Length: 130
Image 1: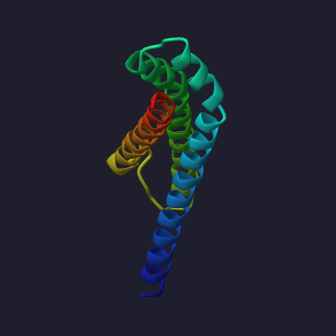
Image 2: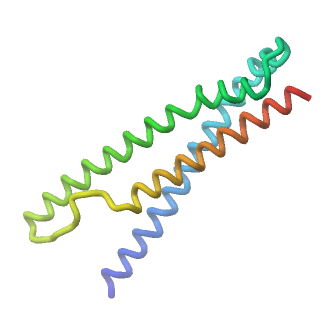
């Protein structure tokens, strides 16, 4: 019963930390795009099409998120393999491979980051276009 309680508390703490990380990362994205406000205004003034500008900015800001997420999943996978091997020597057994939940969480993060990028870029383009 005590072990179950500790596992639940760890799980809840992990979820909270994950949500804080997502919040900080999305705020960083918004701040980065906001720092480009003058360049966006200049490009619109020069006649750049809003759709083309949005696609360019999404291409500029979103792919690094994909590489960061792939790197994070790779590091987590290596750590899990190492911990599973170490625990096996202690006669405790966990899976050597990542769970589908890990990949689903990474995918959800990418979708949320894409939405944050898109909405923020759309906001600044519409703001400058009006």
